[in-house]
Image 1: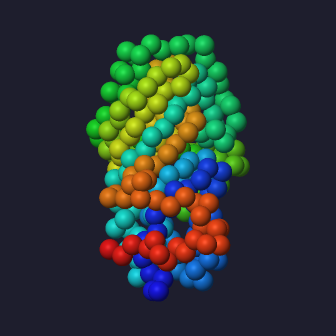
Image 2: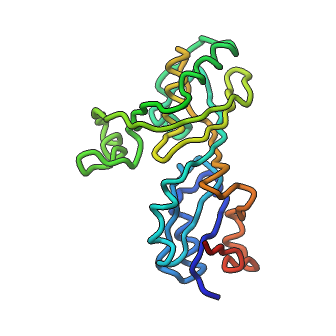
Length: 225
């Protein structure tokens, strides 16, 4: 079977996105494998894996598609990376009520300006921000215009559950941090699941664990668009 196409994978937590590239290169013996948008190691959900040069060259067209996420914010605590992988930087005893939470969410609807986090792969002056951050260096970052639609799914302090649809370049970690700052108690993104990437949904994905199963044939699950 022709090893060119799209494989939709539900990434497991605790793995970097490149781990999927490594697994598929080993399994399919295909050098040209990419994806249509990375996920942080702690995050799970839709990874659009592009198999073969015919599809990797189309990566930019898939990268520009809107994406949807479900996330859990942990209020009252901030971390240096805005997620559970960073060291704790502050605590707060302030407990916002649901009306205040909804008000903060409403403040981040539509087109907003977002400052990329220092712990990110974004390049400034030719250097990745996370490289500078690991050296203890913080630099000025230009705000980026992004588009966001957020829905409140549930709130029971300290956990705030949201669903967000957003444009390319949006950092949900930063969104969590900024909501926490507006509430005055701080917050970090404890859990994140990508449920949609462009037209592809989580229900269409194969679990990451299947990629190492001897009876699973990834070629049988390739899509061609």
